[in-house]
Image (cartoon, rainbow, N blue to C red; front, side, top):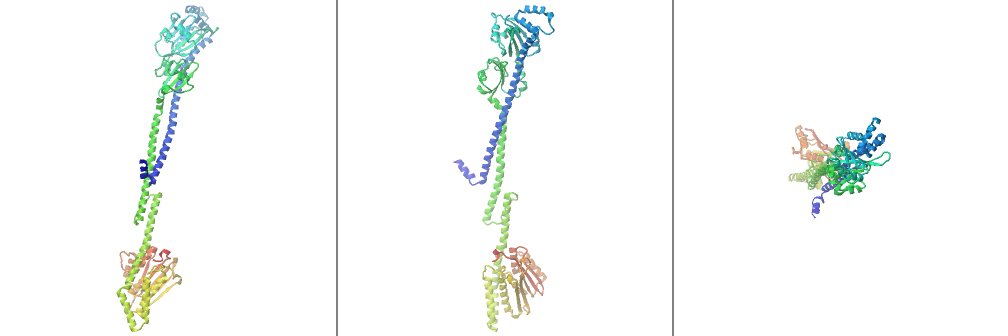
Length: 607
C-alpha cells in the first residue's frame, strides 16, 4: 500500500523520476553483478595464492626431511660400496666390540688410507651434519647399542632383552622410514625431551644379506622450522609432518608434536586435498619412500581473512560507484527536468496571454535550442501582431477619425449650404451631382469590403475631389492616371485619400483659378506599384517640411499631420521599415507625395 502511494505520488506522472529510478536500478544491478564477479575472481585468486604458499611450504619441508632420509640411506650405500668398510661393519655388528678392536689392530697395516673403521666412519657422518642429534647402530646379534651424540661421544650400551625394552622396540620397527624416536631408546641413550624425529634403516650383511641390526638417526626438529622461515610472512594455519602411524613428527604451532594426529584417519582416507572436521582445509603431500606425510591445515575462517580485505575494498568501491552512478545522473536529469518544467511554465503563461515572457536559457543543447525557438516564435508573433493587428487598429482609428471629420456639423453645414446656394442660383443639376458624390463618398467610407483594391481607393479619391471641384467650380481641376493592370491590386483602405485631404485643407489656393492636383499610379521596380500625388498648391516651408518628416519618423513625439502619419505607420507595420511615405515640397510651387504599394498577401487584403 505504501509502495503504491509512493509510486502514484512521485513516479506515476513524472517521466524524469521514472528515468532516474530505471537508470538507478540498472546501474545498481550492474555494479553489484560486476562487483560480485570481481570478488569471486579476486578471492579465488587470493585463495589460490595462499594455497600456492602452503604448497611451497609443504614441498620445502618434504624436501628437507626427504633429504635427511636420503642422507641416512646414502650412509649405508657408501658403506656397501666400499668392500673393506662393508666387511669391517659386518664384523663390527656381529662380534663384541673388544673383538672388533683386536681385529682392527691386526688389519691396521692393511688399510688403504681410506676410512675403513666403522666407528670413525659414522663419527665423521655426525660431524658433517649438524642437524644430527644422535646416531645409533643396533646389533641384533650382540644386543648392543652403539650411540653417537651431537658432541661426537661414542657409547656402547648393553640392551639385553631381560633388562631392556630396546630389543623389542627394534624388532617391532624393522622397516625403514621416518618416525618419532622410541621412548625407550631415548631413555636408554639419555636424550633430552627436545623435539626430534628419527630415520630408521635396516643394516644387512653385504655378502649374506642377513639382517644384522638397524641404523637409527635422530634429527633436530627445530631445523624443520628453519626451512619455513622464508614463508613466515605469508604462511597461515599449521604445517605438520605425520608418520605412517599417525604420529606428529613436526608441528609448526607446537600443538600436536609427539601425539597421534586427531584427524589422521580423515586425512589418510581422503583421496586428495579438501575440508575435514572443525572447518579445516587440508593440503597434503605424501612421501612414500620415507613413509611420512607433510600436511597443511588452515581453518576456513582464517583462509577467509586472506580475501576479507579484498571484499571490504570491493564493497567500498562498489558503494562509491553506486552513489556516483545515482547522484551524478540524478543531478543531470533533475537539472534537465527543471529546465523542462521551466519551458512548461513558460508555455502556460503564453497560453494565458502573456506574450512578453522569454525563456532565459543560453545553452546550446536540445532544450536550449527549443527555448531559443520558442523565444523566436514569440518575437515573430509579437512582430506579426504589431504589424497586422496594430495596423488594423490604426486603420479603424483612421476610418473613425475620417468619418467623424466628414460628419461633423461644420462639414455638413458647409456642404449643405453650398448645395442650397447652388439650388437657389442655378437649378437642380449641380445639386444632384454633389448629393450623389457626397452619398457615394460616405458609402465608400462606411461599407466593409473583403478585398479593397486600388480601383476602390482611386474611386474614393475621385468622388472626394469631385465634391470639392463642384464646390470650387472652375478654381480646382484634377487628373487621375493609372495602369489598368493594377486595378485589382489589393491596397490599404484610405491609402491615398488623406493625402488629397491634406492638399484641400492646407494646399488649395482659393484666390487662384488654376488649382490642380494629379494622381498617378504605375508599376515600379521589384513588383511595386508607385502612387504619386502632385499639386501646385502653397507648398511647404523647409522648417514645416522638417517637422512633418520628423513626425513620420517619430510618431510618438510628434502628433501633427495625422493623415500622413497614419499611412506611414500602417505601411511600416505591415511591410517593414523599408516602406512608408515620402514628402517632397517647395514653398510656393507645390508638393509631391510618393507611396509604394507592395504585393499584399491574401490575409492582408482587407486591412
